[in-house]
Length: 107
Image 1 (tube, rainbow, N blue to C red):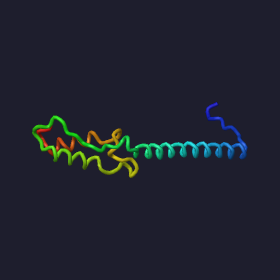
Image 2: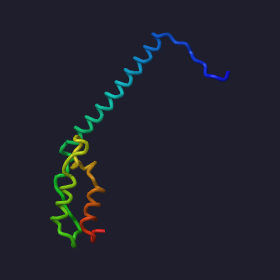
Image 3: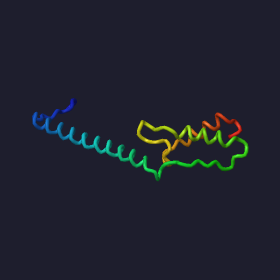
């Protein structure tokens, strides 16, 4: 045969199969949303929050300015849900690049 063979299916079979697909998709989407909400709630716990910023080994750059840059970078949230001051997901690269851009001697 050169063409694809089409299987004949009843309307009930097609409808049942579509309904099963929609139910599975809805369940998977619900699990995904639940996971995101739980991760957001866990990320707001005090155990993961950055409270104190300590700068060590600095002799050239003003420590207050460095601390202000770090505080500015970790304030706010990702996607209006996840705090940037979370010790697991804080913006390390953004902090380093901001410091390197402001102070050329920090390389």
